Image 1: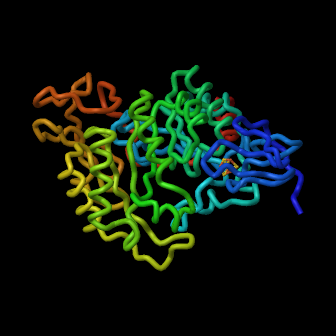
Image 2 (image 1 turned 30 degrees about the vertical axis):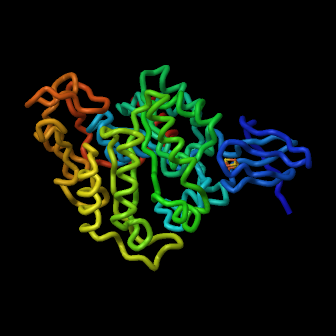
Image 3 (image 1 turned 30 degrees about the horizontal axis):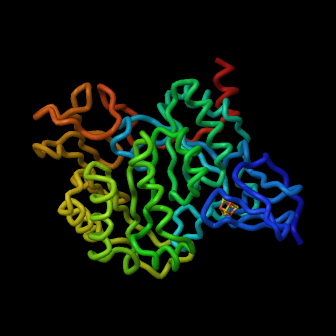
Length: 368
Ligand code: SF4
């Protein structure tokens, strides 16, 4: 039996002739009877409308290095206030954040936080941006947009970490409020998306093309390479060629290491050699900024000038170890601009990860 639900009125839905109500936020287009929840679990039908049941609640806050999102070309070295809610609109068998994304009881989202409180916490803790991460912000669009507006009023940037699985109309509103994004391109075949994520590749590619051609959002792409599933040289070549052809040479691409988790525990961790090879393939395809992730690989984390080859930004995990960009973000050796959003100097946050309780943080501040 369906439990009564409560929440904030959602956008992007319509009533169907058969009496059900369809959520139009993502390409799953869940069709709901009264009291039912969508696949993401956090959008539900209540009194013939779709509500968001997690508005104003978070699964926790943490100050991270921006490189952890991963974003290597967006305010490098700066701290980002990161948070998520619960639920997800994909069902990836290899989910690396399943304790949050698969949360079914909303005990996970115990930190109450208004958009203004989050933006204020970012200002007071010295963060340059707020990231919607840990689970996909597409499903809590109304909350994410309100937080983003509160951030912009205070000069704080916003970052979406998303699978890009969103319908065309909400996509416009959602990304209008974002300054940067990392889009998970989970594989490069419809078969992979269908078998491992119960979803489709095509809408994700549409989101990537939309971001490139119709917005000013700075975005980077991440592909988690899973042994035997999406790591063949042919698939990596096809993905690299598509990025080169449809998005251009200056979109950063991160190949990151999988570790066995959730329902995919019969695959080994990604060997470093696979990540190195993927980086080589994508670089040979013409992409200028290709990185490895989730392994210790300072060479694979270094940004080079695509014109003269000089090191622009050196990294060791999330520490910035070298900085050869001029104040306007150009190579100090040859003057060629590096694609991205840069300030005169690198931030100094380093590799720290600092959990933050918003309410405790507020009382601590008011005590001083
Ligand atoms: S956002 Fe949630 S409820 Fe809406 S279509 Fe997607 S999975 Fe279904």
